[in-house]
Image (cartoon, rainbow over all chains, first blue to last red; front, side, top):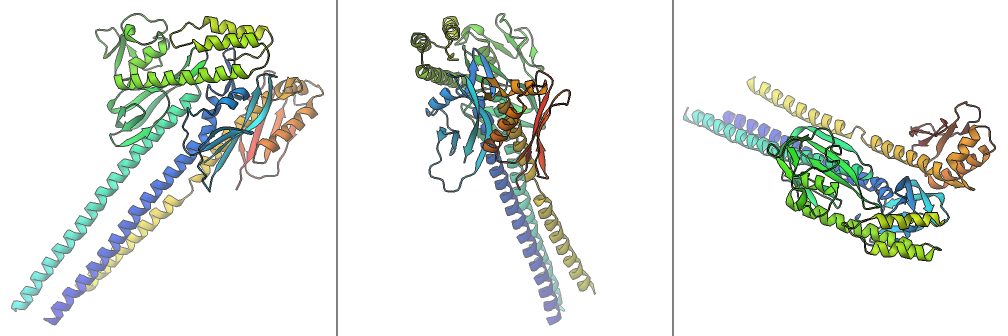
Length: 138
Length: 251
Length: 139
């Protein structure tokens, strides 16, 4: 009888341990996948923030337009100065070009990331174009 | 002898219970994992579309969206929903209609000017549908991208009633063609707001430009009375006059 | 005897399961990040060229002076200093720049020491001369 009981116990312990190991592995794998998805999401948000430089420099409220002809990657300085009027919501970011703040909704975030892109800035009075830095901070 | 038999019985019961526990654990995991994968796929579709919309905003273009698997899409006022689960918000002007089990969409963008560029409007269309317009509209067929079938009114899935549109512009004909009623109204409202904003920027710019005071004042007063159904020729002439006087144009 | 075989079989299953999971971990960790960074660096390089060609120097644009330089004019030093100054101020990365003239006589080159560059698209000017920029990847 004892021999039989021992056998049952051995089998039970083995199956129990295997089940626990498999369960832990599955849980870890699942959590890992969830974390991977969160990383993916963070990367996507980063990409969106960086892609803002392209969007911003193509907005009709900023892009140089003279007699209906637009200049690529060139921002009108006069438009930039009046741009920050609350129409757009880019989320928690700060966007500026040289010293001009186009959008500021950073809300005192302590750790921020930055991406910048060169653009040209036109002074429509003198019609001179100089290089400028379009910076997105998030 | 009896006890040996009982031992055998216990062994079987134990194995069955252990097996059931293992099976239910695997089944539970499999269900959760499949849900997770589907959510991920929905997000990929949603983000892919968002990415295309944003790049279409920068340059007028045409792009077929074909990901090789079927999905549902619903267009609401300021978001679209993939497979009734994944919601992607947007704050740009895009016109589209609900579609079920679609594996390909035609996406194109077109500049909307009045007279300055207001936006690049994005249109999303299910190529399985056919279209017609209630009366001849100049440039309608030429302005459509490849893959959209234009047929007679009696055969079309969608017939655009040109006389019911709020503004007389091809942009709104296309908008009515691709969108449902709710999305159309929202899109038009957003475009109107966008127009007001761009107009305000040009008005403020005109206010800050030095010299040619009366010419800039003329442009400002015409901007003030400019609406989406206004004639733009006088404003364009006033703007051109600035260039003739050697002053910086407003737009 | 049967028992020992059972235990060995179960042990084998556990090892296989663990190996498969480990393998999956390694697969997922094998680098994805670099591709995204290169894409944005390429966009930045293109933007720099697009902006640079429009920059005003004196009463002319950089592009006009570049064309003049290529046709044997005296503006090569001017465009070189403008390109270096603008690059240093408005790019965060070290960069390589070349103005490649059609007849290859008056090219302007700014070289770089970095070993890993991302190519920009190049711009072809109306005269047929070409400009291109390569940014260095920051590690």
